[in-house]
Amino acid sequence: MPSTHMSTGRLRAAARHAACYLHAESNAAAVSRSAVPMDVGRIASDVGSTSQAIANMHTQPWSEQATKLLFGLAATGVACSAVVHAAEERLNPEVLHGLANDLVQGQYADKERAVAMLSSMTMYIDHHDVLLESGVLPALMSAVSNPKVEPTVRVVALGCTADLFKSPDAQNYLSTHPDFLQVLVQCMRGEDRWDSGPEEGGLAKSHAARLLSELAGYGKLHPLMVHSGAAAALADRGEELARLSAKQDRHYSSLGAVPGNNLELQAVDEERFTAAALFGLAGTEEGLQALLQQEGQVLTGMMNWANSRDPILQRYGVGGVARAAVSSAGGLAAVTDAGGLKALVSAVSQDDPQAQCFAAAALGKVSSRGGQGCQALIQQGAPQALLSMLQQPQPSKGKAQVGAKVGAQSLGVRKGVYRCALRGLLGAVQDPQMRAALQKAQGANAVQAFLSTIPPEADAELTNLAGQLLKQLAA
Image 1 (cartoon, helix red, strand yellow):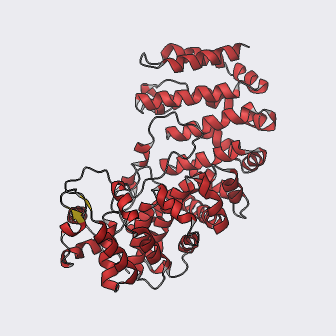
Image 2 (cartoon, rainbow, N blue to C red):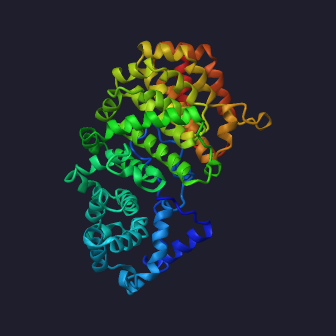
Image 3 (cartoon, one colour):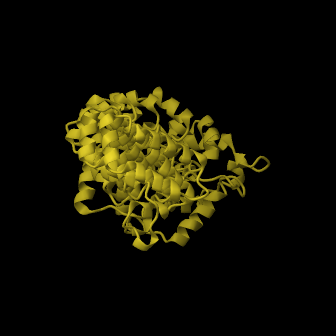
């Protein structure tokens, strides 16, 4: 079904129209339909809040088809008061039960109306509890799993389901319905009529990747993702997307740089969520091994993302390689064979501060273990790269130095990057070979210069970490 182009004004008008089915004058923050779980066991987390970087991902309504359906709500004859308890300003469970039944048992018009209304509710986290208690999730999953359901309704239902899977209760429900993951695998592969939906199946794949990125943020769900084949499907799809985007140079530094057609927008979203899902899976040994055992070159794809101009892909690409490198001897060997150590050394000078921290933490941990990994990092220039993170901004030189990039960030983020650098260096200096390499690179002078120029507002921890490092370098 071809997409119908909607102007921004019409989209906003649709959102206002749908709002009558939500809290009256609600101040509840809407869940970004492009939010990616960040707190999934970071290697390093010293750059302050990471939500702002993710906010650069798409925040427009995720489906023009859903918006089109929302325009039809005026003809349904369902008053706002039927969905919202006027006194308590909350969703009416009885009506939600009715919508769930319509979605499962109703005619096409009933299903269309139900999913349109639900799509205006699931985007709000504050509504998730009552939606789940009212049996909405099983109804949505039933619609998603049924290939006989009209493609647009099915895809919008998948988007609503992905919204609800931000809730731990929804994730727990999945443990008793593992077959649903098979539906997501079919979606990613364009099977079972999924390729007939909006944007030639692109919107459905974007929703599936978003849902899986939520699940991958929780290690307890990794066995389920591995056994269902979802991890393998993500690995295959991630490799394909990374290869295509690198070949086409389809990486964008900001949302404004993305062309305005829906097909391209959904492709960008799908790749970002797939990268986030693979990063999440790399956080456990079972998840990582499932990725590495695939015939494809998952690590190569991650390294492509690490070098991307897209800060979201950059972050998750670096993070995935870093997690693999520090996981085990086998993981480090796989990263080394794929040329990943060089990518990590380069990553400390990337634009994204979280990517810098992922790289610094991995370099420090690999170095602290000594052996061939540490020797390889020395040969790749890791000592100089880590020390360069302590450089101060040089406004007159623009972005010629790493410090200038960091300086463009807020003071809090800048201090976080410095903290990551110092902790990485403190890990690296534990190995005698790396300590000698840092001494040869005039590491003590670099740290002293850092101490003499850090902002007066710098916290005591930075001074303390730098002092510890100086002692180690003098040993």
